[in-house]
Picture 1 (spheres, helix red, strand yellow):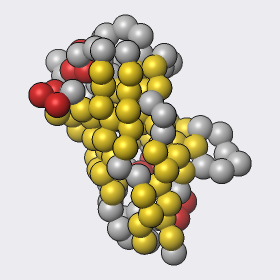
Picture 2: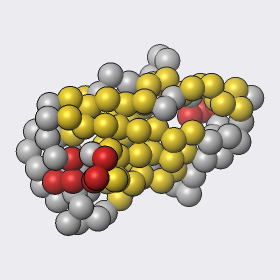
Picture 3: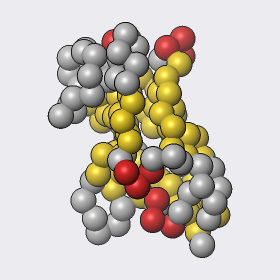
Amino acid sequence: VQLQASGGGLVQLGGSLRLSCVASGFTLDYYAIGWFRQAPGKEREGVSCISSTNDGSTYYVDSVKGRFTVSRDNAKNTVYLQMNSLKPEDTAVYYCAAPRRPGSSCPSGYDYWGQGTLVTVSS
């Protein structure tokens, strides 16, 4: 089981990026997938989650609501995080994660983690 996050980069204030999380070794549409970030000197925080396809729920931390959108493309075994109106405080390494077991809802814990992709927002 592997998750590979990509799509990070340097963007100016107000810009957009789309992160991708590609899964291998399991069928992603049966799993909830979470996005997390960790800024320098700060603890990791949950940013967003998308439940399995048969549930269809999404979750966002308050600080990104209205700016970030999580979605999945099951044909590509990929989950995306579209990030718009980016702010300097969004600067962090972003990770995607999956639980060990398939299920509908976003779980409280995750077992498999991607390697992270760096997002830097300049002012």
